[in-house]
Image 1 (tube, rainbow, N blue to C red):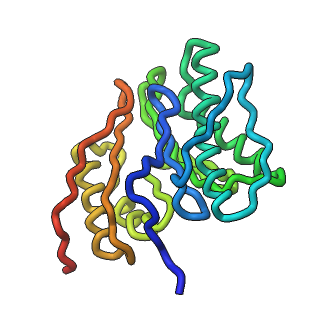
Image 2 (cartoon, rainbow, N blue to C red; image 1 turned 90 degrees about the horizontal axis):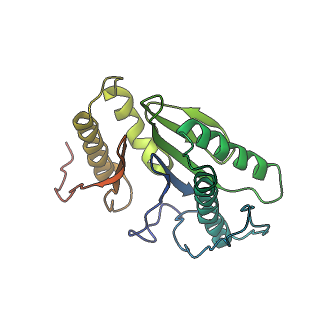
Length: 213
């Protein structure tokens, strides 16, 4: 019998690409944080490493590798041009790299959520991207097992004029639902917020037991 398995609970599956853009990632092969020791040399450009990986463990490594490859290239652009790419430009770049890899012999099995705040247009944005390089701007999104339990809650309660406090309340509803219905022991949430002032980690205490109705 096979199903969801928790391998590690202390991983941070997000990458800050620049001051106003945050990327969350997950891999098709399972937990993506088994290795984070990828180092990129300070070359004029940072190409994708030409490595052919085929085993499930290698696929996990490739997911982390792709996230750090994107992070390094976005930060390199910022250093070279003394400016930050906006969330739409970052999403286009990420989608292009996934599409390029998809048409090679080394595709990346990675699903992404890309959130950010555009200081020029003064508006937030969220992009959903999967391992087939399908990209879509959405008001809310989820990947992995959580999407099967949370999307209906988000669809019912989200509205365009939502406040931060209302958003945190909806997030609490989602975590309560995961505690009730997820077929593994839910280990909690790491919450990060992107605003016009940058990226910050929000304290999220989730130690209250939830009773099934």
